[in-house]
Image: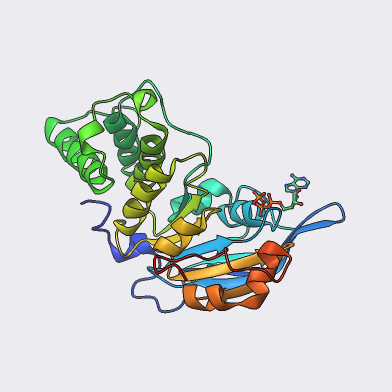
Length: 275
Ligand SMILES: Nc1ncnc2c1ncn2[C@@H]1O[C@H](COP(=O)(O)OP(=O)(O)OP(=O)(O)O)[C@@H](O)[C@H]1O
């Protein structure tokens, strides 16, 4: 079974209608600062949903609240209709809400394949005796290789993670997350530090993710956001400004003013037609 071939139970409630992810009145205060202030929005199953906003808008804090890395001051996080607010990051990951890390969490001396294999093994609960029977080993390797191929890393599978380029490492981080079989994949500023060419390549990777994996992406790079997202949430000063489809967000005066703090917004959203 590959990451794209999962049981309904691994994806949350079988055949569940309703959002894959919902945040309801979510707040996080640091002293008197409301870094995230009463934010509510929903992420539809299978969506590529981006969270954007100017510096200090609260995106990273929101991401940490959703992932379970930071406790909320108030509000709740729902995964496939289940309230996961009280669960740790690990508990949420076990239910399918899996994040990548902005800073590398890879074993740099292990190969790309070994990094993915470890995640596959963890998913199957194999820790003490990783290799077991030959047949089982082969099945696990096939699963790891399928993930590497989906992430366009199969030609690099024998390379040590530390020998990969920055962009390839970011790909591998997604591969490791995908190998744990998430229903909702959280991507934390994947384009940070990437060259334009790497960012372009990463766009293809996000587009190639299994369609039944819901993706929530926090990202600065608007080219990447508008290249992959079917839904965008905009934050400003900790508050939810707008959730809409990309065209609505591009057309919103409020969004453009939030970014520039001014009326001159002509350069902000440049699409391929130059508009
Ligand atoms: N641990 C913390 N303690 C105090 N203030 C914090 C903490 N983390 C974030 N903040 C503040 O909360 C606000 C939101 O920060 P956050 O990093 O979530 O915004 P962001 O939208 O991700 O910004 P950027 O785009 O610059 O990464 C900022 O004013 C920030 O200084």
